[in-house]
Length: 107
Image (cartoon, rainbow, N blue to C red; front, side, top):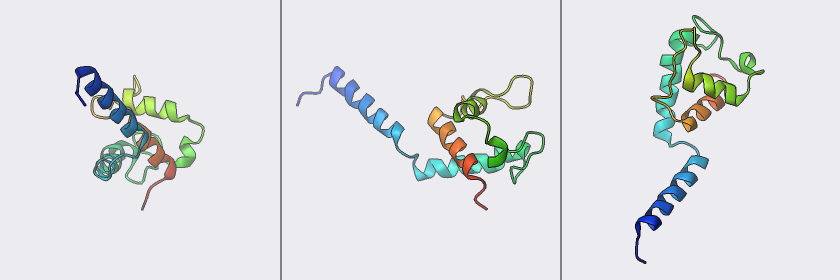
């Protein structure tokens, strides 16, 4: 089969779309857990009960949609110390973090 630029682009888009629907790789999950514990924990408390930032425990997040939480992670909260993480995180990363926050701390 001859690989034209159009064929290669279609394959790349198809693989990217398929990858976007699966779970993040274990290595990336470990990186995000470290970010959640260390970076988020610096303001929201290492136990996620709150500090400079509000609690990130499941009960505190219950009334917030996944989309609102993802937006806060990616774009920050103007007028607060919560800065945007979009330069470092993908939407899939943010979605995974929201699921992890809803699950609660692992320890």
